[in-house]
Image (cartoon, rainbow, N blue to C red; front, side):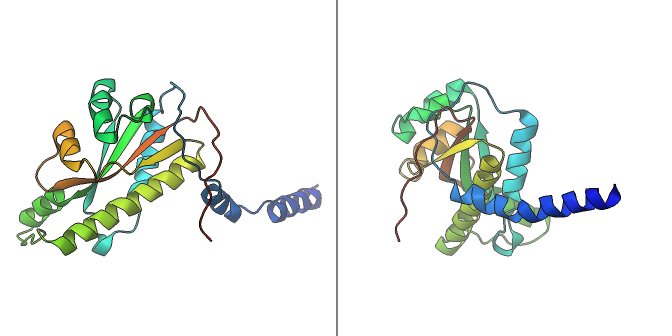
Length: 193
């Protein structure tokens, strides 16, 4: 029996390459704009966000923050800032990824260090960090069957989003994701060669 079990185990592992699962998730990406009304379990959302936070960041400074909006009232306020795209109000969660110097500056001050993060290079660094975290969230979400859609409207109306979300000085929205259980299976978009 042991040799039969071993044979089945070896066969299964050799036929099913677990490493391909991550690649398959990436290759199957599609933008989902219609979501089921079912919300995302808090534990699952926490796990997806924590996977996002494991992204590499510049010097491990982690100069980003994520604002998770599930309130229908706040999503309704955000809609005009995102050109009234319906997925803003219909998705269970709207995630706003921000370049965040406020948090890091406070850390510097608590550790008797000079922040010095008020220049263009620092902003670019924080924007890159926020986008790296966002992409990790996407991969984590899609790997468990959630759908997402990036919104390119965030930078067009960052000032309005700052006001709606009541973001403190030094926190700038970079990108937004809608996230939820897909209620459609859209075609994948073509990629340039």
